[in-house]
Length: 226
Image (tube, rainbow, N blue to C red):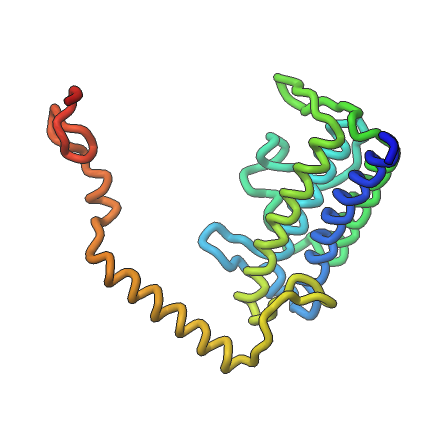
């Protein structure tokens, strides 16, 4: 395979994994109410529509701003463009339809960047340092980031209504009805308790972080060598 052929194949592979994660986000929202797609399901507020809003902003930042190809999208708070966590939840005025349409529009823009630039094409990370990034590096980053957040969406959707699966036509789940899964979960709970009991009582976080006496290290041993 020629150099050009290898680049085409590599770009195709990376793009396929990115698109797989994109499609997962759309599927994870199917069949849910406005309330359920916005419900904060973790202590830090992770929710399905917010995850879509976030990856929209991330793609616009990396495939757009880095390569001087701007596209309108939610600003990333971590890049200094919005208040803390603003890109990880949708306001009541930001509808599902608008948020999903924005995501599709941004990924079409990203796809044009991927198609038109070579993998070794470079852009500049916005900010004081202006670090150079290749399209290859950006693609790898966005595959990793989008797949990571798709995993978050998997867990959040299961917490909302019990729905599971990697993709609509390839769920990648062990066969079993609700009774089987309940039995499986009970088995794991038993194993966890059994392993915990075998290890004996463990110090609390407060005890582990308690400072030693002067002249002792964190484990209570005499400091200063042998």
